[in-house]
Image (cartoon, rainbow, N blue to C red):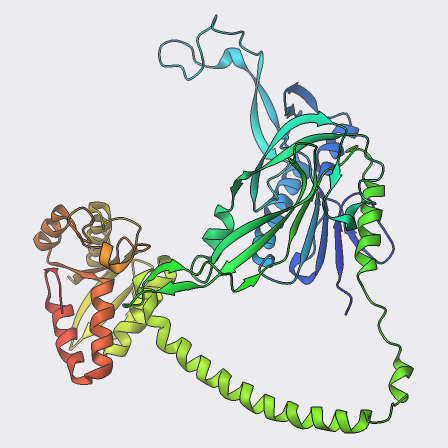
Amino acid sequence: MNKKILLVSSHSFEGVESFDWFQELPNIGDYGLVILDTPRIFTFWSLAGRLEHLGGNEYSLPEIDETAKKIKANLLLVKKKLIEMLEFDVTVYALYSPDIRIGTKFDSSLLASGPHSSQPPYGVYPRPKWYLSEFINTNDWCPISIRTVEEEGKTILIKDKSYEEYFKNFKRWQYYFVPDSLAIDALENYYESRWKVTVEPGPIGTNKLDKPIALALFPLFHNWEHGWEGELSSWSYVSEKMGGPLVLLPVDDPYNTRSLIEVLLRRIKGFEKTPPPAWLSAIEILGEASLKNEIATENQKLKAIESKIGRLEDLLTKLQESKGLLYETGLALQELVKSTLEKLGAETKPSVVTDEFIINIGGKEALIEVKGVTKSISKADVAQLITDLGEHLKATTEEIKGILIGTAWRLLPLEQRDTHDKPIFPNNVIRIARNHNIGLISATELFRAFCRTLEEPEYKKEVLNRIITGKGVVTF
């Protein structure tokens, strides 16, 4: 099946959906092949004579108009969608140029001077007349950061022969990549709850010193390995799957990219097979019918097995949800804490003053504050709950107990948490909580108590009683 092709460029081609960087872009996730003409971001303004060169890779616009804002929004949109897409069977080609910073200029004489100035003192080296207030970087679209070294040369060694036509008319290369500088924070942050992500660079072309001038970046997705208590302690060195490649290709002339895009389109179509015509189904080879019947029978069996596996996987996923108490944060952690308390037998309802919730246990109510952090629970976290309790009293005229449930040091293995130098609740937090009749519950402790109730349902009553009556650190 042919993949839909999206081209973001000023050029258009038959059979390819094309949009310029300043236009409303379609849902990029609908496409299996994406070509990004990123030099166009610079040349759009340059050809219109709107850029003033301030030096180096910095250029100034006379104003940040609606078109500039749309281009910036599209750069961020493309980055967001590529982060989501690179897990799947998609190929992204980017005609690539080193970073160009575009914004508005301001007079350097307006900067503060003197002992507290962040600028070097006059006389150390000449101060430029203008400084740039950056609005966009032309590589803001890219979810994988990689440094380039600007240098020129003529020799191009093609490592992937399928790209020979692409480099056929290149007279020179103008930069090379530094693979050791790869930074994939955006991908890691997006996938951290499901996968450990690494990126394998594959040179397409190099200079004579084996420095890559064209790269294919392959995202690799590794399973997290769970420790004995369910924590994400490490990851499998062998990847579970490979995502779609992000291919970074140089351009010979940023103002003339059409021929390079034509080569890419020919390359893409060369890998696509012609779909069989409709009339071909009327032609049957001896033995074809019996094979079709056997395949249909086995498919029915397979569907039944897949249906059963699907039901079992749903049950497993539901059972494993509570493990999120050990590492989640934000709304995801809040919902997990809420559902866990409900499974233990507590009633819940929305808070009238916060986005958190209230529990009711045996007629006693408590306002719940949920925190998931990569360090200890802080005084500020408790202070927020105290503030919310005050707001609740003001709104309802009723005093209510406060309980803070926290997943501290959430990315560390369980055995490395709640140690002398990594406490869940530091002493100052415990003191404040006791003074304000606030209960402090580690989400790890809540998880262990919940697991015990799966074996001993009668234990729920004791857990709920400690939750609603506890002051300071609550254990089960």
